[in-house]
Length: 164
Image 1 (cartoon, one colour):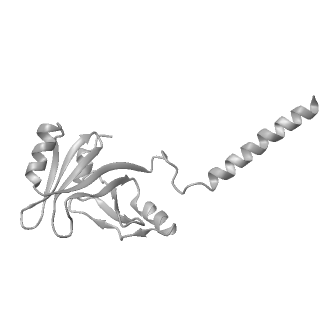
Image 2 (cartoon, helix red, strand yellow):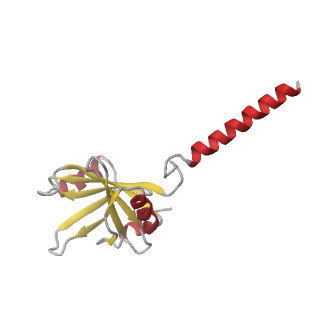
Image 3 (cartoon, one colour):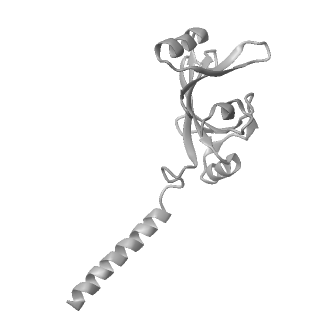
């Protein structure tokens, strides 16, 4: 019987060690660790006002805010889907054809996240401030798709609409 206890105890210990090693060598970002939240999907549209009307009237998603460019034209409109999720509508142009052009991840600490991704070898842009006062950076993934990293200070337009 003592042999059985030693065998079972050894097996449990071995499994626990193997699990701990696997977790420590696992992904650099554990799913659900709270460091990232899907915040928005950016969509370029042929007719911005028509799209805003559709999202409001047909889908029931209210306009949260809009941003204008220096010429006074609407550059983007955020439609609120839930307390912390949006659709970012932008007019299409020669550099941004109609369709989904990026998705945005909300981060709590841009410096730390950027440093982590750079350390892992990702193609990450410099940190900049957006027109909404958000702190931004982009990751271009291996297929050329853009992942926008966003930190939202309380005085940013997004920060004013986020309901934590």
